[in-house]
Amino acid sequence: MRPVLRGPAVASTLYGAALRNLLDVNVTAAGFVRAGGGYDDPWTRDAAINCRNAASLLAPEVARSTLLAVCEPGRRVVAQDNQWWDQIIWVIGAWQHVVVTGDTAFGATAYEIATASLEILDKERFDPTTGLYAGPALMQDGISGLPVVEGESSFVLDYPGTAELRCLSTNAVYVQALRCLTLLGGDPSYDRRADELAAAINRHLWHPSGTYGYFLGPDGLDLHQETAGLALAVEFGIAGPDRTRQIFANAHREPFGMVNVWPHFPRYDAQRPGRHNAICWPMVMGLWGSAAASAGEVELFGQTLEDLTRLFHGSNDELFELYNATTGAVDGGWQVGRQWESLPHQTWSATAYLRLIHESLFGLHFTPEGITVAPTVPEGLGDLQLTGLPYREARSTSPSPAPEPLPRCTSTAGQSPPYQPPSPVTTRSRSESNDHPKRAPRRHLVDARAHLRPSRAGPVLESAADQQTAPAQPSPERGPGHPCCPRGHPPPATDLGPDRRTHELLGCPPSDGRADGAGAERAARAVAGDRRHNHVLGRDRGDLAPQSRRGPDAHPRGPLTCGAVRCLRLDLGAGRADRADRGG
Image 1 (tube, rainbow, N blue to C red):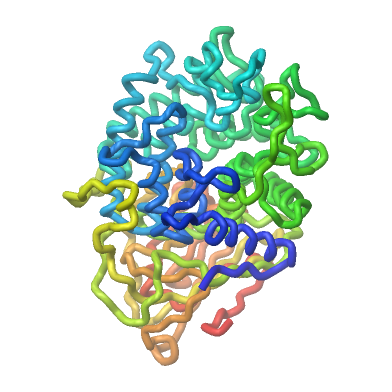
Image 2: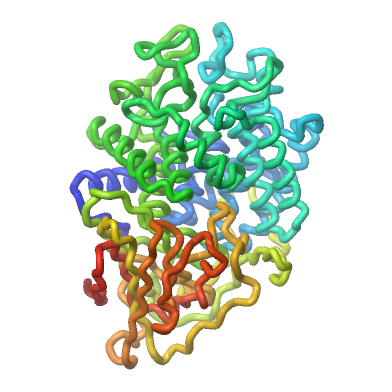
């Protein structure tokens, strides 16, 4: 069963189109996700982004194969090709895969691959003078993304000095990759390095005008607006609250959305936009929308979602590679003297949209401890319901032994033991990447449905829990500032964990026989005053106090375990508290 988004016809249609793009059109016979139409290989950057965005959640086996397909056969290292500057993003995709799937065997392999790959990059690309990593920007493999005089080649590294640039987006990716390494392997030294790199970014790339520069080059700081870099600096917690406010206040948006780099370089203009310059890439727009949601910028998130909807719907619900920022037309942009094609069936266009729906709009965030729910719902969106979303492949109808525990992160107090990767795990070639150690058995299903209705009153969260289940106790290693979420979010709002029961979120009926006669039900509801990350699901009505996501009491009093959940409904309607039945 595939997820279904019910609501306005346009949203439902685009969600279905994005699912087909990812799961049908772009899964190859070899079992990996290709980059999209015209790109038959997965590519390291695209593979990591697509797995992080949606593939690890919706197609975990395919995602695993995709991540391994971009590694060197017979070597535990990311593929050593000529696009080296974005190799480290693989670590972020790998960590997300471990968190979403619970595949600890892959986590052990990923840690080895990640540390070996970083060792190479540290030796060859780290600049000790500035404390930054050298290389082009995340999206700029084409020379149209830089303010230089173009020649005949479109490849960025064919131009002198491009390998020595220190770019915002690339260094932001390194920060998050270092944090993910701590989460994967339990080594706090990577976290310290991430802090040092973030400080170097703020020291060298922040400008007093209230935004980050694009890159540090031989002529100093370039002040073009790089949307991907700004978004990642916000989402990865590099910018901090004050800089984040300035970034969103000062950012320039074109009529059809945020562009890759603004303004136009002198050789381009609105009639002939550069392919990697002032033009709309849905993947980059998705990063911007996710960053806005993570910062509680509801209106900006809603604008991005609307921009993507207009672009995709305007191209007959096909998800193209890039679009004209002033007309909304499908447009591949200009580079090295010619107009390029914007190719259809682009996987990262699809997964960018899916991530905005799952993780921003419906607010599902995956951590080692489970799932937190913190929706971001713009005004005027209408009623939306998402059902049938799989989580850890829950499909069975009978109990089974407990699965392996997920990796655990180290808390700020150092109370949580570091994750010890299982060993050994045999090396696999690309042709063997579909084979893997036996995974944890599937377990019970849980019925959970999210129903969103925009309202100025803020979100209302309702859950029906089995009274016979003992109340969950607060976890001593979790508190304000708990770092288990590598995106830097505040402590979780609603926790569906930590007993590691595999389940299907948003739409599967419970199957353990308790639903029809297990005892009295009680509901716990929390009404939040803020639109994001601030409502708490208590286990008793004494817990029903409004919480501020910035205050020290933002952490829930105890996690809600999957075994205690019969049905979950998120309802953002004012004063609404409908019971969600199994057949609802």
